[in-house]
Length: 199
Image 1 (cartoon, rainbow, N blue to C red):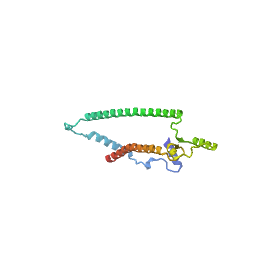
Image 2 (image 1 turned 30 degrees about the vertical axis):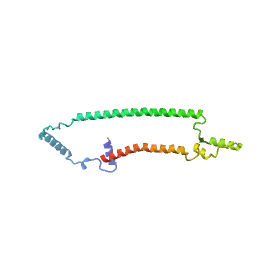
Image 3 (image 1 turned 45 degrees about the vertical axis):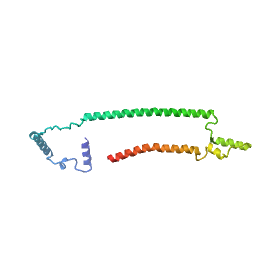
Image 4 (image 1 turned 135 degrees about the vertical axis):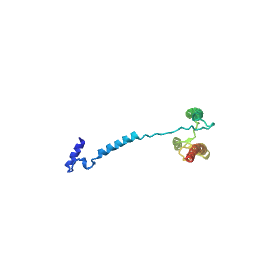
């Protein structure tokens, strides 16, 4: 029906219509039938035979069989996996202990800070400055500005640079972080080198 509709539309535009005689040769069907008969004739008369023989390959006596090599590889892999699992178990337990130590140290610090006035009380805060300014207005003795001996013991919270005692801890922390960063960097570099060499 669609083809008839299209042919009708083409005839309305002034074309001759949908006569296939102009485009398709008249003997198209005869050529197809002859080609199909020739194909059947070739299939019936032309028999193709293949002859082959199997040769038995001689294997080396000391060469392992593929199943043996696979078993040895799986055995070594399982041993290494067991060792890795054991190491990861130890690491997980150590991390659990470190986590518990952090919690207990934080609780101990909080208890000391709340109970003992002298515990880690060496920071000059904004509240400390307001108290000192109030004492100055009343004409009482003040602590600010700090003397050179007090500057070594107390930490100014508004200061940009840390005091010398904290600078030492900060430098140690930076060195430890740099050393810890070298191990993954070395592993990544080694991985990159192996990849480049193998390709």
